Amino acid sequence: MRLWRCSVFVAALLPFLWWAWQVASGQAGPEPGQYLLLNFGQCALILLLLTLSLTPLMKLTRWKGFALIRRQLGLWSFTYGVLHLTSYLLFILGLDFSALGEDLQRRPYIIVGFAALLMLLALAVTSNRYSMKRLGKRWKFLHRLAYIALALVLLHFFWVVRADMAQWSGYALAGVVLMLLRIPVISRALGRIVPRRGSTRRAPRTS
Ligand code: HEM
Image 1: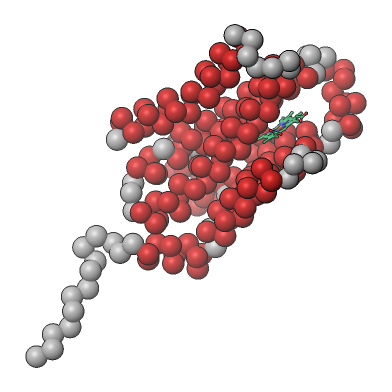
Image 2 (image 1 turned 60 degrees about the vertical axis):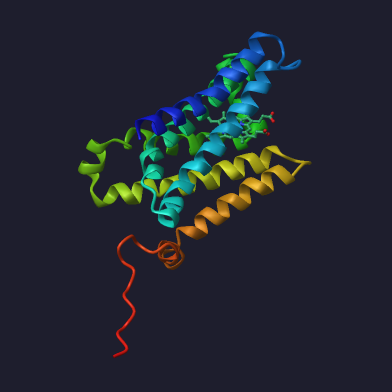
């Protein structure tokens, strides 16, 4: 299982290394800052969707490996979100914070993205065992924020894409399916698809 966790770690780190290399070697096009901003944003969204798909996958397959990487993938989603914000501050705003107010008026979707990132921050800082114990039942409730964050990110993205909706629709569809899978009736049904090991019922005796 350690190998599985390490492989996930490397797989999540690779996009960052690849894009950094592309920028360093001048292969990121005429606007490397924008290139990083968009790629980090999409990566954060994909990782958030993957994180939320792990519980349904575990219910469906009963493979514990999915649960083992849930925290790690969630933290990676937050990390790429922070890299996305950093790219915005560095390359779009040029660290000129006096221009922030005007930019927020021009692009209010940034406020929505910021709200989503704050939620991911709250999830990241409470994703440890200590917070789980301290918060008790409230921990589960708090971690449902991930779905609100996902909805906000989809809204943020929707606001950005004006012409090509195909890509956004794919992410939105994945998000809707994941939210539907959390509805208790559907979630329970999902858990019954694969029978629990050792719970196969004996056929009734006929004589
Ligand atoms: C403070 C927080 C955030 C800021 C300042 C921010 C800023 C931006 C900006 C300026 C763009 C549009 C770039 C353009 O087309 O000109 C953008 C796009 C995007 N952002 Fe954010 N964002 C934030 C949070 C997030 C978070 C938390 C996520 C995901 C978890 C995210 C995902 C995306 C995606 C998927 C796009 C569209 C990328 C594309 O068109 O390929 N953003 N963001």
